[in-house]
Image 1 (cartoon, helix red, strand yellow):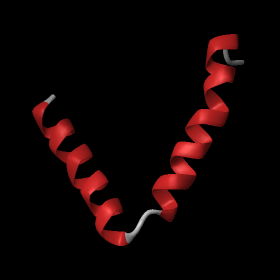
Image 2 (image 1 turned 45 degrees about the horizontal axis):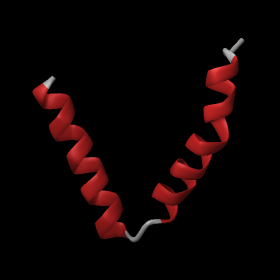
Image 3 (image 1 turned 180 degrees about the horizontal axis):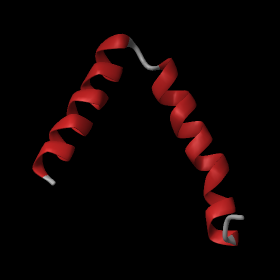
Length: 42
C-alpha cells in the first residue's frame, strides 16, 4: 500500500516514463548515459 503522497506521484511518474519511452533515440540514450554516470558516482 502506498502513502497518499506516493499515490499522488503515480500519474506524474507514468507521464515521465511515457515521455522517456517516446523520446527520440538520441535523447533516450542521453538519459540512460546520464543515469549510468550518476550511479557510478554514488
